[in-house]
Length: 246
Ligand SMILES: [Zn+2]
Image (cartoon, rainbow, N blue to C red; front, top):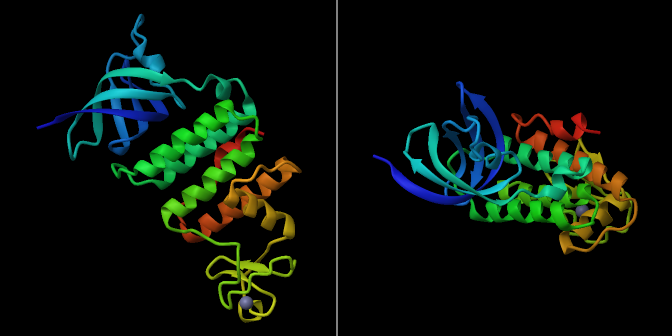
């Protein structure tokens, strides 16, 4: 038994399959991350194969069968191809990093409406905002870590609750969190966090626009979040797209 499902989805990646078909990985509104086959997509004169292309936002109709690894796409419509992302190498790089996070760290078939909305929102921002794409990516990464359940706070010392972070001697412990100069003595492995990075995360939190030093700061923040996530999820090997395209 199968049921027909109509859903919006972001195309994460696609591979050729057989002589004319493609198999795509999609993050969908109604079913979460799924794999789906589009038969005959590479035959000439069919537009379907171009619609199912990475980064695109599509609306698809599926024959959904529980316990089947690959679902069958019966039709697809293009909702947005985010053309500005595809014309800008920096935007593209961070859009692929976003896809990497979704592809590698979400559970197949697990619906998460907030994550779907967050993903569409971030692609719209990449597409239309003139903010540095690395900063936009940091906003998503920060949100994504929270969605995964590994939220961290850079607001106050996790042990004593002291909030005065205008002191450069605060440090971050991946297990415990932020530690003030007084409490850090009791902990071993730690990462220094400087004032700039504090301010950067404070801006992300309050959704403030970040103007100065965006390239350097966003790459530091990405590195910090990558390392933090690697510590908590040992199957996560870091983001390749950012290193590949630079
Ligand atoms: Zn403390």
